[in-house]
Length: 463
Ligand SMILES: Cc1cc2nc3c(=O)[nH]c(=O)nc-3n(C[C@H](O)[C@H](O)[C@H](O)COP(=O)(O)OP(=O)(O)OC[C@H]3O[C@@H](n4cnc5c(N)ncnc54)[C@H](O)[C@@H]3O)c2cc1C
Image (tube, rainbow, N blue to C red):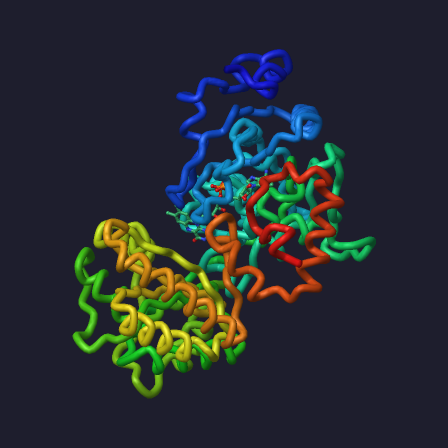
């Protein structure tokens, strides 16, 4: 049966800019969470004008609208759980302007992260956010969930690296936020509000990204520790000295065990934790920065520090780290993948607590991630066919979040809330803040059409 939305789209958009057949729409119902729901239709807008029309159409029909980048998100944020229209931004992928003198790049949201890095790189610049998925994920998706990566420890996240946006609010009104300058304080900061809002307030149609000059060179160090406490103490020492690394990644003993399984590596037998530390900067100063970091990384419990001798060596070591996440999929039927954050000095308490929870619930937990930010990817390895284990995992996860909040942490550093973490949000946000956020949501989206069921708990639950 043809729905009202489908009928309207047939007249509004040329056939090549829409999908209406359920078989064609199927692929647009999922993301990397592996959750799925079938949308009523998919549209491929080519400019902001088309988006204004589509938002207004959805508003008039009271139909949900889910804006989608490339669907690499891990939280079900683009799964159309209430049906409606999926707005796929993949055809709005032009890089519009690169301005080296003013250090900005203007792009449409459908460009991939790596396309932006390439365009900026031709002028000697880069955009700091660097998710491991950069070859596939879109700038709109990076902004939608404030996605980052290893470089955030020195250079920050999309919120720190975006000057302004063009967007279409859930009212159907186009708007511009932010400035083209590196200073500016006129009005409320709607740019930071829209970044991380997971498509629940507005569709971002253009972004002015703040660029940083490419460093002349890098130096990678790999430090191995007897145990997690020793590694965490080293992280605190490294972060307390002035040569801030451009990456400070951590792996626990379980992650090291996995690496042994698939990579050719000569890590000491007693290795209980590992740090990968990279410094960048001017050629004349890199030796001093590397030495300062090496000194901070040494100390009680440090078993070995290897300095990558060549760029190829560094590339090999990074490949090992980046293969960890996909490798987890191969050793367990399912991984429940969280990206909690705690203050850097509380990392040892977090890891101790996680190990205790793993033992209590009989679940293997593998931890790695961006230690310099205290952002740890906590992976519960489970078998979805085992109902007893799945129940235990649910209780364990609940306690993981309790632990993180007790350590003054936050539920998500970069993956966002989406569908899967919604019920925990009330534990982190106080009721007054949550009410104000709901109010903001109503201003941007009075009819509740923008990605409903995501990011914040339902209004009733929020009161
Ligand atoms: C192998 C792998 C590695 C990963 N590594 C990392 C990592 O290192 N760091 C990290 O942070 N994440 C990582 N991710 C998660 C994911 O890639 C990022 O969150 C990425 O930013 C999602 O981009 P996307 O284009 O796929 O967005 P989608 O998944 O399509 O959407 C993500 C969110 O953004 C919103 N959105 C998309 N476009 C717009 C728009 N134009 N306007 C408003 N909202 C919009 C969506 O509604 C949704 O809420 C990884 C994923 C995979 C599969």
